[in-house]
Image (cartoon, rainbow, N blue to C red; front, side):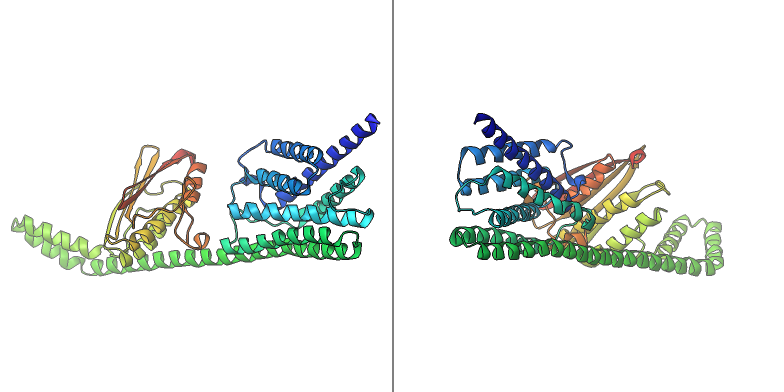
Length: 424
């Protein structure tokens, strides 16, 4: 008798282990492993498996089992660096799949009375059925890195499995022994949630395409603006070259008569004529110049005061991509926030000291800081289209082996970035 009890408990425990293995594969379907902060997150799956097994054995309470399973799923999402709404969506979808399969198997194969324990054999069958779709689901996933749907879309999608769980639980209680009704509802809800998986990835794919299109349009604008700046600069040079003979004659005359002050004044006028007002930055790094000139053109249109101090060597290094991402988004965020303030002030300073690139962006702002936990958030509605937030800029900085420091007062907001050029 004791042997049978032990064997049954082991079978239930193994079945729960299979179920959590399936959950792991469902989790990998929804979110990339690269977003997981822990290398050994399998420990959470072991804890979740043992915890839910213990609760189901000690407390014969369907409501408590539901809470324990949802809590375990939320625990599994903890190490992943995704929004809370996405974590809740993943939790409810995976739990909905579990409960629908369990109800279908139990109602189909055994005369189940609500509130009564299920035999161990059916636990095992249920776990296998939950696991089988993961073999096919892996081929369907096509995740995009750093992508999440807008807040309201995730909320709406997350409500579907949540409502389905409530409907299925009430159906199982109210129908009792009426298997046809319970099975019809369960299969219908299972189909709806399976369609939800497809809809989620279809929406994500569409959203990715939309963002890529917006980013491409912005990149085209950046290059078009830089091309206009270069063409204008060439026109200034051509005009100066055309009149160079006259300028040299005038300067020679001043030199002969020792009119040094007049010469200096005349040369400053020539310098002023040569400078293209649209070319705010000219370091010789084409990509960096293009991004900054584009962003600073917007700053001139929106702000009252723009201070620049850009001193970096020509051909800073072979690939400017990360520096462009950091500079472009920091200046973009600063211009946007400064334009909302009364002072409308922006300061951009970029220097190199030996092997270190120093970036200092300071801007006026309204004095309102948006936080999520301990992290500052962008005020943009669609930050992934218009620009990335400070947290994401910080991730790029960290990936380059650098450091980012944020300071702010009631009126000024300042971001400092330190990058080791040898590590970029």
